Image 1 (tube, rainbow, N blue to C red):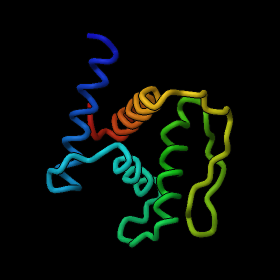
Image 2: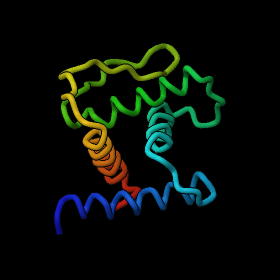
Image 3: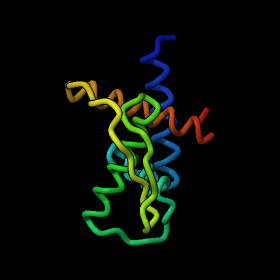
Length: 118
């Protein structure tokens, strides 16, 4: 089976499981899943977030998701418990479809690491 086929199957499995758990079955989009990763990484689950905090949660998620690829490195937690990352390597210029594939691959890897999917 090709790498793309495996990624597609794992992505669909992940979206199905997350959607069932967090959206009453409506399929979650990529941005919503990135947001969930941000909340997971912050660890402050039962809080209402302001718009700028939601953007920051997505930034945390992207940094964490791309850390294994060598683009970011965890730096420290601030006084409020928010993780901060530093850039190790600039992201390459990617087309929109390539960005989407990279993020889906990183998300699948993340949830496999967490044991949420196989």
